[in-house]
Length: 193
Picture 1 (cartoon, rainbow, N blue to C red):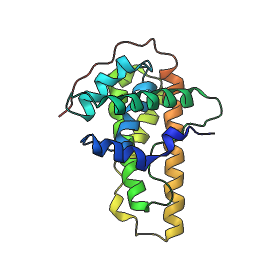
Picture 2: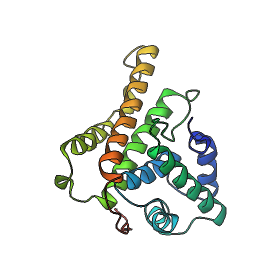
Picture 3: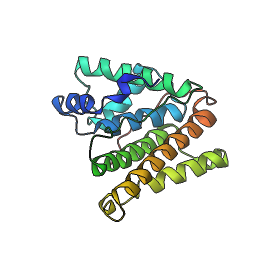
Protein backbone atom coordinates (compact mmCIF):
# COMPACT_ATOMS: atom_id res chain seq x y z
CA UNK A 1 0.00 0.00 0.00
CA UNK A 2 1.22 3.50 -0.76
CA UNK A 3 2.41 5.70 2.03
CA UNK A 4 -0.36 8.16 3.04
CA UNK A 5 2.22 10.97 3.36
CA UNK A 6 2.75 10.88 -0.37
CA UNK A 7 -0.97 10.85 -1.12
CA UNK A 8 -2.12 14.11 0.43
CA UNK A 9 -1.38 16.65 -2.27
CA UNK A 10 -3.71 19.32 -0.87
CA UNK A 11 -2.11 19.08 2.58
CA UNK A 12 1.34 19.54 1.11
CA UNK A 13 0.18 22.42 -1.09
CA UNK A 14 -1.29 24.22 1.93
CA UNK A 15 1.80 23.64 4.07
CA UNK A 16 4.12 24.98 1.35
CA UNK A 17 1.88 27.97 0.72
CA UNK A 18 1.72 28.82 4.44
CA UNK A 19 5.53 28.75 4.55
CA UNK A 20 5.66 31.05 1.48
CA UNK A 21 7.50 28.42 -0.56
CA UNK A 22 7.08 29.20 -4.25
CA UNK A 23 7.41 25.55 -5.35
CA UNK A 24 4.45 23.21 -5.68
CA UNK A 25 4.03 19.95 -3.80
CA UNK A 26 4.66 18.13 -7.09
CA UNK A 27 7.96 19.97 -7.54
CA UNK A 28 9.02 19.17 -3.97
CA UNK A 29 8.34 15.46 -4.40
CA UNK A 30 9.79 15.30 -7.91
CA UNK A 31 13.01 16.88 -6.72
CA UNK A 32 13.27 14.43 -3.82
CA UNK A 33 12.57 11.43 -6.05
CA UNK A 34 15.05 12.68 -8.65
CA UNK A 35 17.86 13.05 -6.14
CA UNK A 36 17.16 9.65 -4.58
CA UNK A 37 17.02 8.05 -8.04
CA UNK A 38 20.37 9.61 -8.89
CA UNK A 39 22.08 8.11 -5.86
CA UNK A 40 21.79 10.85 -3.24
CA UNK A 41 21.43 9.21 0.16
CA UNK A 42 18.00 9.57 1.83
CA UNK A 43 19.42 11.72 4.58
CA UNK A 44 17.75 14.97 5.59
CA UNK A 45 21.08 16.63 6.43
CA UNK A 46 22.17 15.98 2.85
CA UNK A 47 18.89 16.62 1.05
CA UNK A 48 17.34 19.53 2.94
CA UNK A 49 20.03 22.12 2.04
CA UNK A 50 19.67 21.19 -1.64
CA UNK A 51 15.89 21.43 -1.39
CA UNK A 52 16.24 24.84 0.26
CA UNK A 53 18.43 26.02 -2.62
CA UNK A 54 16.05 24.88 -5.32
CA UNK A 55 12.70 25.47 -3.66
CA UNK A 56 13.16 28.36 -1.26
CA UNK A 57 16.05 30.55 -2.48
CA UNK A 58 18.43 28.92 0.01
CA UNK A 59 16.25 29.77 3.01
CA UNK A 60 15.54 27.03 5.53
CA UNK A 61 11.96 25.88 5.88
CA UNK A 62 10.08 26.41 9.15
CA UNK A 63 10.98 23.69 11.65
CA UNK A 64 7.65 21.80 11.46
CA UNK A 65 7.61 21.83 7.65
CA UNK A 66 11.26 20.73 7.51
CA UNK A 67 10.32 17.81 9.76
CA UNK A 68 7.42 16.90 7.46
CA UNK A 69 9.72 17.10 4.43
CA UNK A 70 12.17 14.80 6.22
CA UNK A 71 9.31 12.31 6.68
CA UNK A 72 8.43 12.68 2.99
CA UNK A 73 12.06 11.94 2.07
CA UNK A 74 12.04 8.81 4.24
CA UNK A 75 8.65 7.66 2.88
CA UNK A 76 9.73 8.26 -0.71
CA UNK A 77 12.98 6.34 -0.24
CA UNK A 78 11.13 3.47 1.45
CA UNK A 79 8.52 3.24 -1.31
CA UNK A 80 11.19 3.32 -4.05
CA UNK A 81 13.02 0.47 -2.34
CA UNK A 82 9.89 -1.71 -2.08
CA UNK A 83 9.70 -4.60 -4.51
CA UNK A 84 5.91 -4.20 -4.72
CA UNK A 85 6.14 -1.04 -6.86
CA UNK A 86 4.14 0.92 -4.27
CA UNK A 87 5.88 4.19 -5.14
CA UNK A 88 3.45 6.88 -6.23
CA UNK A 89 3.87 10.47 -7.34
CA UNK A 90 2.71 13.35 -5.19
CA UNK A 91 0.20 14.84 -7.63
CA UNK A 92 -3.44 15.93 -7.25
CA UNK A 93 -6.06 13.23 -6.75
CA UNK A 94 -8.46 11.92 -9.38
CA UNK A 95 -11.08 14.31 -7.96
CA UNK A 96 -9.10 17.30 -9.22
CA UNK A 97 -9.42 18.56 -12.76
CA UNK A 98 -7.43 16.85 -15.48
CA UNK A 99 -5.74 20.18 -16.21
CA UNK A 100 -4.50 20.46 -12.59
CA UNK A 101 -3.29 16.86 -12.57
CA UNK A 102 -1.51 17.21 -15.89
CA UNK A 103 0.11 20.48 -14.85
CA UNK A 104 1.35 18.84 -11.64
CA UNK A 105 2.65 15.81 -13.57
CA UNK A 106 4.66 18.09 -15.86
CA UNK A 107 6.02 20.02 -12.83
CA UNK A 108 6.84 16.75 -11.06
CA UNK A 109 8.74 15.45 -14.10
CA UNK A 110 10.67 18.72 -14.50
CA UNK A 111 11.67 18.68 -10.83
CA UNK A 112 12.64 15.00 -11.04
CA UNK A 113 15.02 15.80 -13.89
CA UNK A 114 16.53 18.70 -11.93
CA UNK A 115 16.96 16.48 -8.86
CA UNK A 116 18.53 13.73 -10.95
CA UNK A 117 20.96 16.23 -12.51
CA UNK A 118 22.11 17.37 -9.04
CA UNK A 119 24.01 14.09 -8.75
CA UNK A 120 24.23 12.74 -12.30
CA UNK A 121 25.72 15.50 -14.41
CA UNK A 122 27.08 13.32 -17.23
CA UNK A 123 24.30 11.17 -18.68
CA UNK A 124 26.72 9.58 -21.16
CA UNK A 125 28.14 7.56 -18.25
CA UNK A 126 24.77 5.95 -17.54
CA UNK A 127 23.24 2.79 -18.99
CA UNK A 128 21.28 3.21 -22.21
CA UNK A 129 17.93 2.36 -20.57
CA UNK A 130 18.48 5.09 -17.98
CA UNK A 131 19.34 7.63 -20.69
CA UNK A 132 16.20 6.55 -22.53
CA UNK A 133 14.13 6.95 -19.34
CA UNK A 134 15.53 10.47 -18.87
CA UNK A 135 14.69 11.27 -22.51
CA UNK A 136 11.13 10.02 -22.02
CA UNK A 137 10.71 12.02 -18.82
CA UNK A 138 11.98 15.06 -20.73
CA UNK A 139 9.25 14.41 -23.32
CA UNK A 140 6.64 14.48 -20.52
CA UNK A 141 7.83 17.98 -19.58
CA UNK A 142 6.97 19.10 -23.12
CA UNK A 143 3.33 18.01 -22.91
CA UNK A 144 1.07 20.90 -23.85
CA UNK A 145 -1.31 21.01 -20.89
CA UNK A 146 -3.66 23.29 -22.83
CA UNK A 147 -4.64 20.55 -25.30
CA UNK A 148 -6.63 18.43 -22.85
CA UNK A 149 -9.81 19.35 -24.73
CA UNK A 150 -8.65 17.62 -27.94
CA UNK A 151 -10.16 14.21 -27.14
CA UNK A 152 -13.12 12.89 -25.20
CA UNK A 153 -13.04 13.11 -21.42
CA UNK A 154 -12.55 9.32 -21.17
CA UNK A 155 -9.75 9.32 -23.75
CA UNK A 156 -8.00 12.18 -21.95
CA UNK A 157 -8.34 10.44 -18.56
CA UNK A 158 -6.98 7.20 -20.00
CA UNK A 159 -4.06 9.00 -21.65
CA UNK A 160 -3.25 10.79 -18.37
CA UNK A 161 -3.15 7.51 -16.42
CA UNK A 162 -0.99 5.87 -19.07
CA UNK A 163 1.50 8.74 -18.90
CA UNK A 164 1.41 8.75 -15.08
CA UNK A 165 2.13 5.02 -14.99
CA UNK A 166 4.87 5.41 -17.58
CA UNK A 167 6.53 8.13 -15.48
CA UNK A 168 6.42 5.81 -12.46
CA UNK A 169 8.14 3.06 -14.44
CA UNK A 170 10.82 5.47 -15.71
CA UNK A 171 11.49 6.53 -12.12
CA UNK A 172 11.88 2.88 -11.08
CA UNK A 173 14.30 2.37 -13.95
CA UNK A 174 16.45 5.31 -12.83
CA UNK A 175 16.29 4.35 -9.15
CA UNK A 176 17.06 0.66 -9.70
CA UNK A 177 19.85 1.26 -12.22
CA UNK A 178 21.45 4.32 -10.60
CA UNK A 179 20.02 5.14 -7.18
CA UNK A 180 20.58 1.70 -5.74
CA UNK A 181 24.01 1.23 -7.32
CA UNK A 182 25.76 4.57 -6.94
CA UNK A 183 27.93 5.18 -3.92
CA UNK A 184 26.45 8.47 -2.78
CA UNK A 185 28.47 11.64 -3.00
CA UNK A 186 27.38 14.78 -1.21
CA UNK A 187 24.66 16.52 -3.19
CA UNK A 188 25.69 19.82 -4.72
CA UNK A 189 23.31 22.66 -3.89
CA UNK A 190 23.46 25.10 -6.75
CA UNK A 191 20.52 27.17 -7.77
CA UNK A 192 19.81 27.00 -11.48
CA UNK A 193 18.42 30.34 -12.63
